[in-house]
Image (cartoon, rainbow, N blue to C red):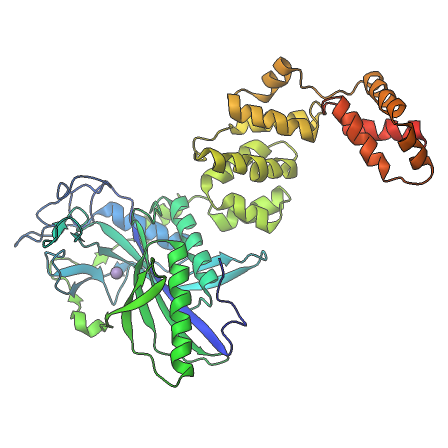
Length: 485
Ligand code: MN
């Protein structure tokens, strides 16, 4: 896609901060025991607490607290041992309590950092401002009836982590890289499934522009609830262009909340921006301050998996991969594991080429997932072994790989049953070469006269005559000897 890049923005710099709402992986809701499974019939997962019945009291779900701390540690962030839940008051039909229980002045997680991986292999640190826990609202459904709206409260009370970045992002591209990296970390941690299409990760983008070199922040607009990386990028791009146009024609930007229309690829004003004081935040009197111990935090820290940044570093160090290749392989934990199974004890660059080339190609084409791959890691490893020990040439290996995808059989059994073994028998190769030379005396003459480039053509003829099974290195060597070139 075409990004809004330097040069295109003229004398303007784009300033972006993102707020990501990530649904916590937990069997039950933040303050009630109702289940959280996606796709249930409307209003089947609603407790009295979630429906805002009078007198019902919220009880904090320890699992959600653990998940928030886990995420904070993964973002190298400050964990606040004491945090406070606050009521954010507003009226909406899908918010039966009349307020959202959130965290305001004292969030559970403070400042942290996330590295985005730039296409040139470098990384850039983006500041994390905070992460707080809050309840999700219910869902209003407007497209089922011409004059009525419906309310589904299944989502009401589900735990969200709102992860707020500092305004450190400078282009739609960087915003996309940030979301992708955040999603990768959350998945590694097992704290959010990162499924944007199902709404378990939603993004609000704060966008402003300022003259290049300026340090002040100008008025920003917030684009709400965008549910794919591409849409976030398009929304930012549109919004940044709009701000630049307004400023350049002498106007000023009004702080407001806007919606992104993915059909028209534009943002539209939704309401003038509400300020924090409009919500009348105050500590929720139904809930004590949330206190966790350092032991609790340390216990979670001890169970953290190796995260993408560390894994990337180890992959490029131990397997000799480029930073870019390592970055691609570690984006998903399952592909990283797959690669390691193939590469362990083998030529790691050859393994990486096969995983990232033919294997990823077949994976995409098959529509299957890395957890249920078209070719197992063990079989792909065996294929690498067969290339390495000379049984298969690179070309034959591609044929065998295609057959592996098609039949699900192991490479060694396919080589056996179809006689695909590479020919390394000197006599057989010589015979093929002699036949090719006898059929093409004119070419031989031309080579002897100095047209050395024709050697490649002769090699091709020999490979064709052996159905690609001859060892190419041996063909080259024997041919050169015979022609005397
Ligand atoms: Mn929020």
